[in-house]
Image (cartoon, rainbow, N blue to C red; front, top):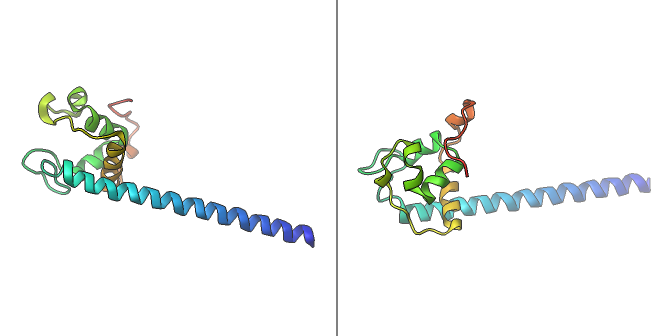
Length: 130
């Protein structure tokens, strides 16, 4: 009886620990997405819209559908280097003065806009590798 109650107690501790870990992880992801949204509004929204094509850049929801996080990160970080892979002119997007944490948060926000990704349905490899 003591062994059973001890096993049950240990199982409850494990389940509680996993639940706490997952809720903390989810909160961190949500914080990154929220931070990314603010950074997007401050750094990207003058050229990019979420749902429709703006005067300068493509809509980001479409980009989120077509591109992997790695591709988006590469383009935001070094747009002149990877612009041809994306089918754009070299000077189509300026290099922004963003920290790696800023880029990470922006990419998380862009990625969060589209649950279903075209590349998930296709065996095609991403265009850009880090």
